[in-house]
Amino acid sequence: MGTADRRRTLLQRVRETGYVDAAALARDFAVDSSTIRRDLAQLTRAGLIRRTHGGVLPADPGAVIDTPYGVREHENLAAKQAIAKAAADLIRDGETVILDNGSTTYQIAAELKRRRNLTIVTNDLAIGMCIAGQPANRLHMTGGVLLETVYTLVGPAALAAFDGLHADWVFLGAEGVDAQAGITNINVVEIPIKHAMMAAAAKIVFAADASKFGRRAFATVCRIDEADIILTDASLATDKRAAFGDRLRCA
Image 1: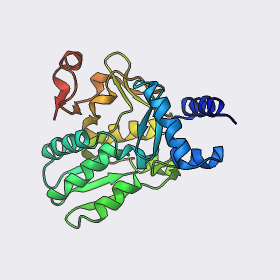
Image 2: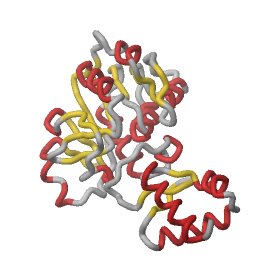
Image 3: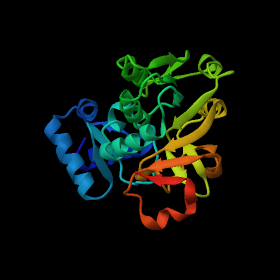
Image 4: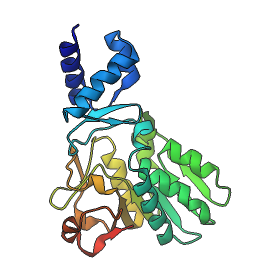
């Protein structure tokens, strides 16, 4: 395959599948890593893709795709950490907290080490491991079937874990936050569990960095007015804030 054909095929794959691992591209195209780096550099300069940790994504910042956890945890990390600190400030010792899956909620879990006697419920295996290292707090993991690449437990067993549960807070992630479309998610399989988490909590908080605003992902989670608080970082443009009213807080 010639250079032009390889780059055209590479670009088509990124657009169709979202995140693509750079090392896998070299194997699939049977070329060395330096060749793939040149291909990616050229496509990046042309504005067709964007580089990320270990691979590439489509260039369109509005394209919301289900990227692997190992990639998402490195994206907008400072913003996620700022959001996490603001989230932990809301919580008081002794409360019950539900944590949705995701890289932002993982940062919230890490911040909860400064709280004591919390009961924390999650369906995220990475968050579970984080909380397991915090002896001052109690961990409840849901059952369920593993959703590959994102360390999330889903299905009837995960859903049943929230029956009859009464929590003070739920912190949920979001793939898209839009004043008209509401809170949206990349897939439908997680929606029932998010709804069960919301129903079990007295206060509903969505935590999403500024890059998620103005995006509309595949499936609707809820309307904006169903959230008590929407936490984001200070980089959200001022002209995008008014539509969310008093529920928006910028860390």
